[in-house]
Picture 1: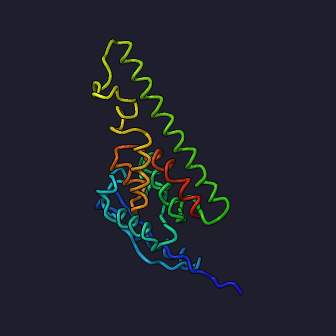
Picture 2 (picture 1 turned 180 degrees about the vertical axis):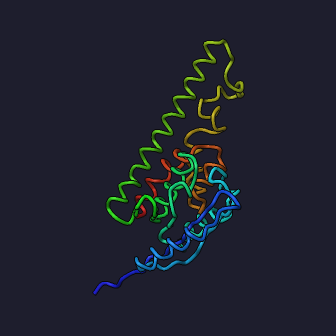
Picture 3 (picture 1 turned 135 degrees about the vertical axis):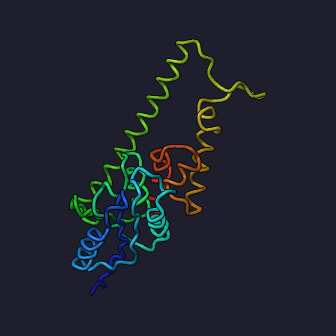
Length: 219
């Protein structure tokens, strides 16, 4: 008989103002965990902190991601999607990071559980969102370059002794190949998608696009 593996869950709760309480969120999510047979290994709380704040300003959220990266939890449970973040960019980055770690997500208000087939389809949509984000960034950059050129603005940082800088070098300070090598190096060192993007000053969608083939091949 195949052994039943208990899912280890980290519960994330957050309220935006000091006048609100996380008690209701915690009680409901703990009840769901008990009914589902999940083991709650940690409660990660950010009280009186806006979801628009970055990871560095949300200690509970930061600890949650660190424990997920360390494979201490198999699923993140939250009251609602808006408890996780207030922008599509942050949400996509977070979902991509969970996906790369093989960590599931349960959202109580949206009745979403990515450990189920229908819930996993949501993770697949993250790739669509990430691709859309990359396309919009490229489109804005190209439009800005064309507009500047039409206005007679001289683009670039000048030339090196060994020749002109490429567009990639102008944007990132390194070639695309060098950027991808740096991303993979940081990822292999245990750094998450969000942190890599912040470290290198690039979008999380780009980072996920570089690391996802390697995550998939290792699965």
